[in-house]
Image 1 (cartoon, rainbow, N blue to C red):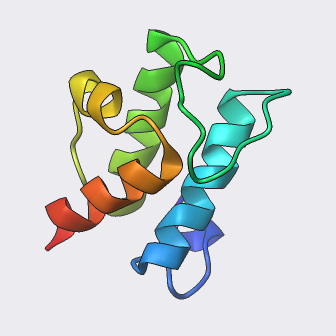
Image 2: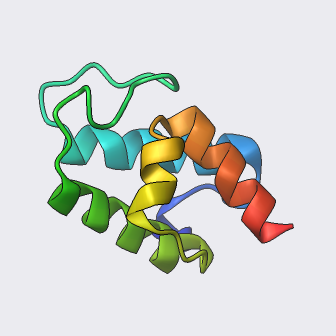
Length: 87
């Protein structure tokens, strides 16, 4: 998930959410990922979480901690957190 791999709206809510849905799907093989999928309930591990947060940093330059993923564990809630940090 990089800015180049997302649509021109990569900084919009829709673009961020679409990229996160794709990344969640890659990190959680076999899980049905929706905007409300809980990362850890769907089988994500702390190592997977670190990979997800690294992708967020690469894509939007936003540094998040694992505790941020614990408090915003779904693609939808993580999108909102990223948008807050970007503003």
